[in-house]
Length: 443
Image (tube, rainbow, N blue to C red; front, top):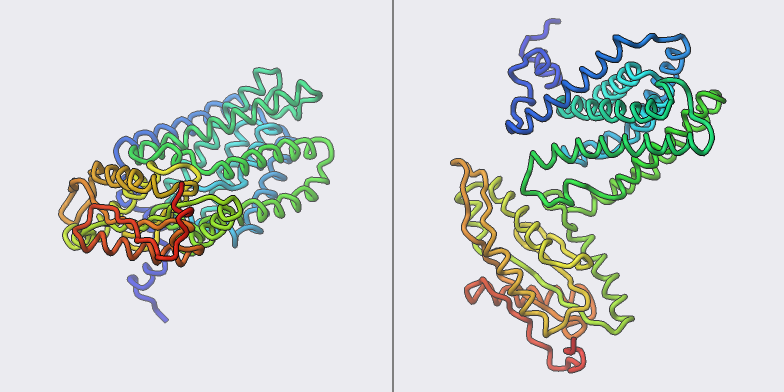
């Protein structure tokens, strides 16, 4: 049975077709500043490994330890392949943390740097082939390069403290301090390299977006700490490495499954709470406010004439506007305020502790922020800069307009429709029900 060349080509993964056609590499699609930065990091990492390899003599012990670490890393990656595939897809191209750093930092302590580079290459290549071969290869190469450079500087810290690369694990309290200093160096270098490329790729993104979630950095810290323990076991009691691996796999699920749960609770475009999660968090916050005898304001914010933007510039441009609006709204709210996206161009916010005297000031501030927003978007006809945006905002008071999330949403949404019907670009406070307690209006 023969298979046509066309059908055979369809069965070949995209990355394999691109690999033999350099002109099709996704690398060249990067913005110029990002491309220069990525190539510089990749080249520096390659140069570091090449120069150290030329001056390093490997021993049998080095090769044995490399084999153990490489095998452990591959077993770990294979065992966690299911959850990592889900996380890779859920991340949607956004960098996420994993526990490869555990094995690599162990290598920094017990291996010469060229073998650390080889360990990085083996780990990332296996991950690329087995976890998600549809991901962008240049991102994987860049991530591997950041690991190599972080490892090189961490090894330099160990060397400066009199601990030659691959010499084993430093002893005593002084040795522990050296290991911690090396771990911090590894983390800072890797983190800085990644944050820099994110900032170059999107200079308008808030700083906290580039810095990511603190919980993710705790995962990295845990991995580096486990790497120190793994190195000690590998040198002194290598048979216990298999026991620690079981712990690592359990921690992998314990640390990283919550990240999937967080992603399920987050709107993919804006990073805000999705509707169901917002309602749940809002209900919990209202319960606490009720116990405290406190008030709150709930806002429903709907962009004016957003459909015109989609029709005129395309849905991709509309998505970019939604992202810009989400950033602007988040920037105007306090850290403990809740902000969610209810689909389309509608946003909902809960402001605990705010009352009727705050409503119009809050609305004016949000409307002013949107009016000053002039996002540049990629439209179907090229780049376009939009004039200031407007929105119709409906407001409801807790507990005056209701004691539940549904009651408040209904009141605020009705007020928002009134604002829309009267021309938009304004905030309307829902009328108080006749039986409302006047004390509920105090805030």
